[in-house]
Image 1: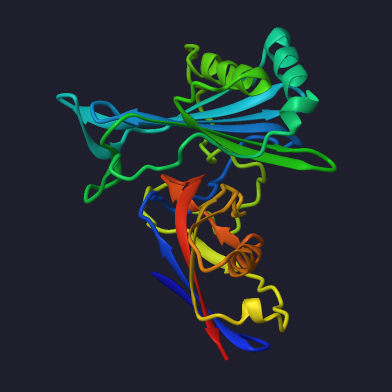
Image 2: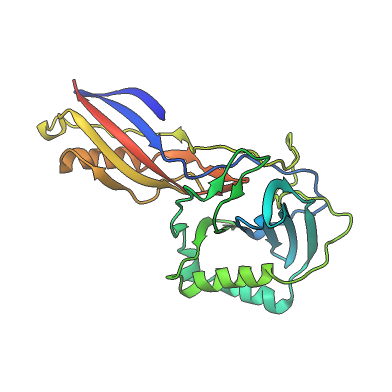
Length: 301
């Protein structure tokens, strides 16, 4: 439990208790030295999949505006159809997309419908599907996550898809299919190229080797508290419990009240939480969405 302690607002004191469900793990991974010449990035895709027999497979792909790509592939070791948590040496692939692949991708991501995509698609509940206590976390069930980010001159975009998601349609379905198809193509690893975790920036800044660790909870970074009026309807003792999702960029996804006081206090609690920012939970370095229950306690002053 993470507690944010008293914040006085006119006639009451607001105590905020944040109770996180354990649904995501991870660690902060950073770039190592890279031989890749950095250009503006068109898109960055991370595909993390696995099951209880093969362990995790992580593929990251960085595509530049000239069509060149840098891809890294990491796999967990598996002995007798059981992963042991250790990782095989990373494979690095570099080259240039075919003109057809590049045109298909570029046309897709420039679609207005595609640029409207953000947040999390699917159910981010990983509870019960991970095993801890080994050199690294391993999957206990099927896990399949696709995360993508685009950096443009005047805008950026990030979203995450938890598979399988039967209701995918339109540009999102096309994008996931494109990424999955491209990821499955057989390629020969490039010799002499160092892994850099598909970093967009070549700056090292104290970078360290990719070593999986665990981090159980997203962390509250900033919060804003709305002002309260003197309306008697807002001068009530009680607790409002809110369920939310912390997105991959640390923003708060659509909220819902699962235990309220009255419509006025419930809305006050929702307004309090909706602009908070978090450091997202991470699974093997991948920022992932995670569910959280937030309890807002009002004390009449």
